[in-house]
Image (cartoon, rainbow, N blue to C red; front, side, top):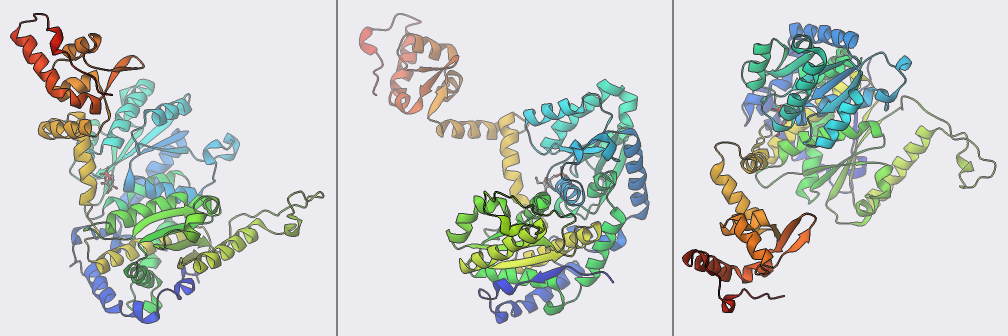
Length: 529
Ligand SMILES: O=P(O)(O)OC[C@H]1O[C@](O)(CO)[C@@H](O)[C@@H]1O
């Protein structure tokens, strides 16, 4: 029989009394019914609840076939996507794969190298990645539910052109795999027009809940990880975490305890791991909880730390800083590989007492010592432990946190399945970039940006004063506007300049009236330093 995921809150007992989480039981029961009967807010996005049981078997087979094709004709798979459209796959690959897989000698690699792109707007990242691709056979999996997200869309434009240049349009088509909405969206239309192979992100599953759909499964399958075991783990977890009694349901207990802590001022949760392989699992978890709970002025702030690395940086704050933190450690009972500490005859570092000890053992003691120290420092500690870092347990762990997040969001009284807050930056970015339809916002935002600046370029000054750039330049040259050189251009201190704003305007009116007659000496603009 399979072992289970263990949740232990012994190191939070000093901070939350039993009755505090037990009293949340009725609210959790309501949340449970809201999820399972699909009656709560955001009920259009609950497809993930039964997905491990009800996923589309035909599509699953197509994913398997496509992954085999990519494995056979590609040295590299590029996964283009952002947020929920990449973090889950990256998390799974990192935990189940080799830490330096892409750098291993070819003889030790059976499957393509996988790189994630389209998750930032960095030209440096993309051009460096293009350098890596030289001479390699490449396939691309573009993942975007909306099909219009800026970061992946820009990356896809660049890599589509790259592929078409390398292979020609027809061959490139066979190397592009699209994962998007079933019917709607720009990407779906493009895929249909061009004849790219398409996989579906179900309508009722949001990005951050989509790792067990084609979104995560195609890259996971290409990496050679066992997607059957992953799905089985999630399916078993679905059954296990259906139980209503908090004592028998570690997933619900975790949701209850983190909410009890939140109500006592523990507003930041650090997801901690002692394995760098869990770095992206924490990133996935942060999106899951951050987008689900951070709304209506509420929510635990999800952060992460990697120990023991961060004990040498964040450790001071965690031990001693503001007491609004609690930790959730994600750990693996037994490391997949282990090493032994060697004896040093000179014992320069004084560590010979560790000779013959396993590194996994040392890591465990670091963990135990840290938990005690942090609890003493006022930081409650929760533990979620999987027996081993295998696909099966990872599937279970993903489902554990997905469900805990849904329950927790309902306990908090928010809609855990929307993310209205992420639109604000997008609208501003589009306006500033001059997207048609955003003209009014563009002017307003640019004015605000100028207000917030100490120095303005000539161009910005001209826009600020609604005067021609040539006029500003002329006045700088005449010494009437004070400016300093910054590289090849002039910049103007706005504060100083504001003092003279009215005078400069008058100057211009005067010049206009005089039709470029010379300006009287007495009407000079004064400098105030
Ligand atoms: O798959 P899409 O539509 O490109 O969205 C990517 C990500 O962007 C968000 O919509 C937020 O901007 C996430 O919720 C989502 O996972």
